[in-house]
Length: 137
Image (cartoon, rainbow, N blue to C red):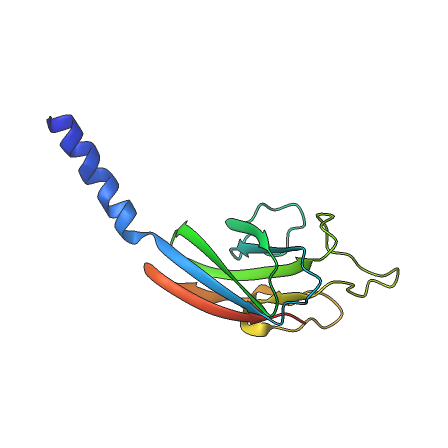
C-alpha cells in the first residue's frame, strides 16, 4: 500500500503541471483535406528533421478548424501549420518555392523569403488551459 501511495504521489505533480493548448485556425480553405499542425520548442524549430513536441492531423473544415493538443509541458513554443488540401503528406510548393497550400505560424508571423524564426512565433504555454489563434495565409 505504501508503494502504491508513493507512486501516486510522484505522478500527481506531473499531472498537475500538464497543459492543454487549443489552436483555432482561421481562413481554412474550402478544398478540405487535412490540417497538419506541429508544436516546436526553440531547439527543434529550425531543424528540418526535428520531431515536434506535439502534433495533430485533423480534417480541414472551412472557415475554421480547432485543434487541441493535450499533456504538453509548460514552456515556450512555436506552431507551424498548413492545409494539406490534396492529402499527400507534404507542403506543396511551386518550382520557385512559392506555397501552393495555405499555411500559418503562431503569432501570425509572416515569412520573408523563408519561414519566420522562432523569436517571431514564440508564445508561452502555462499549466492548465491555453489558447491561440492562427490565420492561414
